[in-house]
Length: 394
Ligand SMILES: [Zn+2]
Image (cartoon, rainbow, N blue to C red; front, side):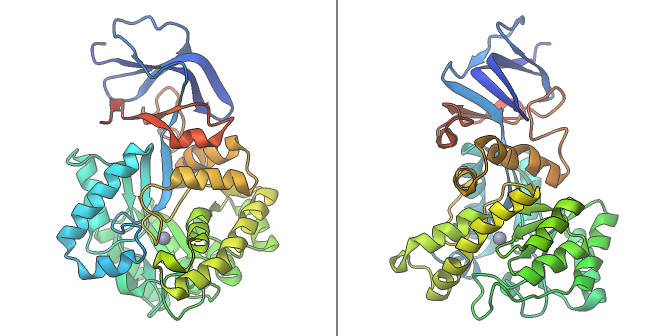
């Protein structure tokens, strides 16, 4: 095949515990992996060689980003005073940076004016250089709930059902609901429950009917449990996860997206970072709790996936390598942390089989890093090149 491309590296981590030394990947004209093997490829095409010191791994998948926010001290304030055009152009830059950092797929869990959905379309039309984007559009919250100023307020089973249908009509490919308060809405506590079990269950029924998944922002203990009982697919943040709910999540197969780096980053930043006092205070409270939640989730065998809350205060695009490194600090092995941000994230998105591993038939979304991240996770910060659907990204 003339359109065939071959990529070679000192080693390839394919996902799971499959590591091939002195290895190469053959990619077909459709951008899918045709073969993975060791040694010298028998093909007419010259291999693109990342070097003996390089590890080629599946492209990273960030399940929790906000492409419209810029990760400054107060990104929402900026977003609310800018035109949607300017917001879009800013978001295009964030998306490009994210891809260059080795993140080949993102799930955007909240942004206004249809911008995230349009970015997703623009990427698929190859109008922009960006990761593959699965977008929620505006999140759904109770009246006055977490993030109400940039989301869609809905109350009661009928109200939430209508809001989900409206979101799908506007191009949502995942539904985001707010089960509790959060860190960056003034006046509310992260622990307080918001949408009720029956309201979120209605969202789950509507979304699942259309084959879409539901992500729940859930920080407090009761709200996390409410969201799990309602049948959501992923718990975002999960700062105050308790033993009972961790056991329930493991039993039901609910994914946990800790976003531990965003809270830790804010908590460590100090007063001079420019973030509002109420954000600093709340982030200190939830950061330690989230570290504990990650350890608890691991103990109970909860499926932990990779997500960052990129774009939030002091969290510029793309912080996924930082999140993965922090999961290792929390007690995951490098293999577990890397799997969280690749295969497990793909599974949580429902794109396993075509993404999240380097296997025959999967899309050739890959990142070459210098060093071996399975030994030293810091290698993730040393990206050599990114391959998207078999194309080298410049
Ligand atoms: Zn978020």
